Amino acid sequence: MSLGNVKAFVFDVFGTVVDWRGGVAREAAPFLQRYGAAGARPEAFADAWRSRYVPAMRKVSGGERPFVRLDVLHRENLLDVLPEFGIDPNDVPAEAIDELNLAWHRLDPWPDSIEGLRRLKTRYIIAPLSNGNIRLMVDMAKRAGLPWDAILGAEIAQIYKPDPRAYLRTADVLMMKPEEVCLVAAHNDDLAAARKCGLRTAFVARPYERGPGQAVDLKAESNWDVVANDMNELADAVHA
Amino acid sequence: MSLGNVKAFVFDVFGTVVDWRGGVAREAAPFLQRYGAAGARPEAFADAWRSRYVPAMRKVSGGERPFVRLDVLHRENLLDVLPEFGIDPNDVPAEAIDELNLAWHRLDPWPDSIEGLRRLKTRYIIAPLSNGNIRLMVDMAKRAGLPWDAILGAEIAQIYKPDPRAYLRTADVLMMKPEEVCLVAAHNDDLAAARKCGLRTAFVARPYERGPGQAVDLKAESNWDVVANDMNELADAVHA
Image (cartoon, rainbow over the protein chains, first blue to last red):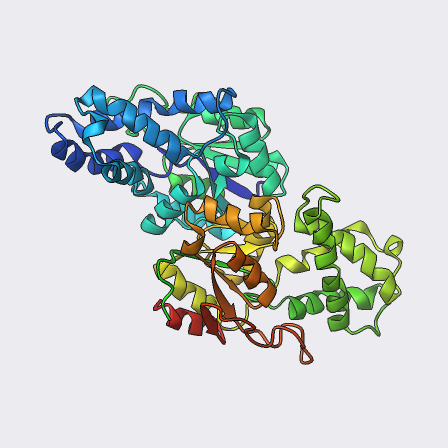
């Protein structure tokens, strides 16, 4: 599989590069224990928190509110989800809320991510094109050793994916034509939005991102330019 | 010397981290030879090109024109400087102009820069706070091995230093108070502007940045928080 004149690979991060569900559950477990929801399943808490992600971003993309970074949305969503698990946010110190909110800064990469990224970096520019804010991405990269060349994405574009401006502004900042940039994602809808903007597309399957019962994004749903089972297969496919 | 609660070091790059004069002269030499200015000193050409840098940025900062990335200003300045060296820009293929303009993407670090940055990176977030655009900084870092955690600076702030917004927006993106961020620069005026915004300041002396006859910035002209002779001395001073 040749990707023609691609010079940069940009990455969806939550789910594609790192395991948000496992990481958030790990950080939520002692919090739930401490604040009166010891019986709750931390994975269910992670799922409930994450489920508020897309609706919250839509309010920004739809113009209902100005752009705010993802840390802000995550914190609002956290306050929103606590009562569902029997926790009154007013019973929790603000510092404990802030600390749990940083769970998203401390997610672990999938086992193949670091090696695959290192290989891709030898031949291409690599950067996140994530809805996560810059500081979140920097903290995550430093902790996990993700070897990004730059941190791009929503905060630079001041708009969230799948708004076309998020993809096009990323290509613009890279001083590349859209077809010189390839989005790597485990999510078919992200890739479809990128393709509409003229970017090249690489699907990396993450069938356990949402746990053992995952029902969506189990496989490529279109003829993406590359389809791979992990980052090393992607690196193989593009000769990196 | 303690820097209190500093969590990030952000860097002026041209002159502080890399040797722009030597690098531009190296790339200009074959160009001058080829296009009829074989007798010109490449260092004089580098100086003349660089001398147009501050006036060009002032037009943006002063509101005379909207923000454009530094590559654009560099190219305009290059067309402007060629006749001074007896070269008619119309006699040079556009590709050769574009190629020489990329000299700024291919500058070499000072001998201590990489080791000093690597040491600082173990304890702090490190990023350029340069007027250079993101792609320029990425190309430079990949070629030279500069281990940045992120690429910050003028293109993210959409304004050039020494406008206060360049410093304050950088702290904002890092989600830090200004006093948690330390600017590292070889230029007293850059540090003065950063201090006015509340950032901490570290002067690294580069007395040969402008060649053997350098007359400015030979030493610290204020009580900057750290004064060092190179990046390793800076790392020593902040226990990195």
